[in-house]
Length: 401
Ligand code: PLP
Image (cartoon, rainbow, N blue to C red; front, side, top):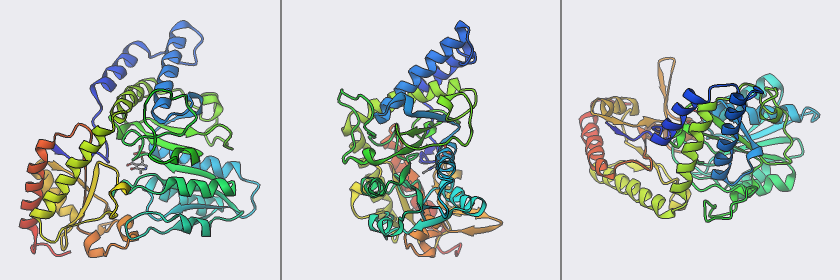
């Protein structure tokens, strides 16, 4: 199998697996229990928290463990709505190209909780334009939520510029970092990073108030995510309890936390050497060029500037093809990839993200996402490109959209 769907999830690393097994065998007591075994589990959770905080250069106490990326996003957004109940006609601002975790909740917040949702458009290259935010934000805005990197295209948004606007207006800025953290250097700037470690190219992290991320996108386990909340940010828990300093109730997922901690340490090591990321970007670029060479008419859905792309993702449109059919055929031949399309009630809808980027429906219908990881064997990419080309050739003309 050639696995090119790492934006969906990644394979847990051996270190992650070992840490989780050890936690299941030896640290299964409740971290809130007074006796020694419970306190040992608590100590392990706190050590794990410190490793995860180091990945983003944050303070351990600013981390709130959540069930997954979606859960972290919902904790942030629901928390903002609860916090700002005094605002009479509140609005939140998000974008048309968010992951469903943000999109669906933003709609629901509007419909059920009487909060207006304002949707920022994307440019042709799939980025959010900061000037659109400047025009949309007002005194009733209680939250701005924007993804750091897009899950379908790998496009990176101007987080520093967006965050600066929010800070000037005194509006909480939440960032969905699920496709960013662990893959790209992150520095929220509240930690004590003295050693040479991850640092942003720009100072984006400094402008973020709340950051969501999930372990399973960087070789950690599923079912564990984090909401990082900058000290001093107004936040009301939507799931109150005694754990997590009162910000989220529920017994801690000790194996999940320790698996995430192990994955964070490995991600930190990977990110500390920028040549590793550059190397993987070169493999992604090579694969992309090879597919374009082998499949006439194929186009990459991406911004022109390579600085605006995460190193692991490419989204390629195959004109006049239905992506789902291509994906099934690829799967039969051992290549795993995915489409941004959703199949709802029997009708195949093109990806709203690609449509919002201005990609015509006939191209959006035939767009496929390929995402590598730091462990992808470059040697398999020629075979993957050849398989894609063979499948497209076989399907071309046979199945009209
Ligand atoms: N946000 C983005 C950008 C994602 O890509 C994903 C998952 O693919 C999520 C949020 C949701 O994360 P989870 O699947 O851990 O709930």
